[in-house]
Length: 276
Image 1 (spheres, helix red, strand yellow):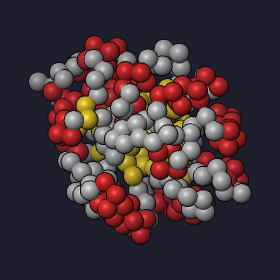
Image 2: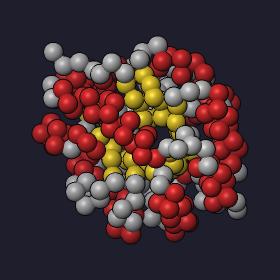
Image 3: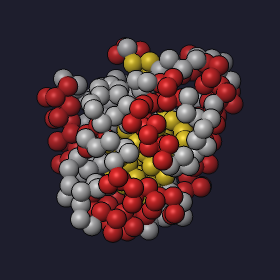
């Protein structure tokens, strides 16, 4: 019987200040008719995961408009200083006049792994030259990026495989975590793995059979690329229980080594490589 490792490293958790969390939940409800089932503020969200043997936790937040990311930078540092065994992808918006200044301050914290860009929400393509300074900083400092750059569960003119491929053509060694397994263009994103050695994918929102959002990468290819996949839940901004995706992945009956690597070891390797 396939089992999870004793502890789970979750590489895709969202933590926001309370009022921003409330605004996001309201936006999901009004804009998409999605009812978030875990309306938990940041302390409660961490506690909920801890009770389920999740740790380390890697959280992120993002700036939906200019003028927010610097404040989130300081908030992230405060959270990291209060709670052990958590790590962060910090916020960034290229239209802030002091964007690279606070980006340097962000990565000065040893448990900031890099930056989250929510390109669907920010409505900026990943290859936009306004990001080039950030990309250079990330590579120079040994950090990473977490990108929502796929077309799922919804898309717009700024996201998708073609946009991402243009970015990776310019920065072939860019260290990127692609959220949601590259959905909905799963196979196209996976085809980039052999060309880009620092590219990985996280499982968040990619195995939701009840929504018809199921990654169509074959079990054989998942097994072959198990070193390049991270478990992520998207918690607490979920419209279905986090256990649904876990059960789906276990139901694929892949190797014990696959589950050890995806649910724990790969995440720990990246934490060791990009923290400190």
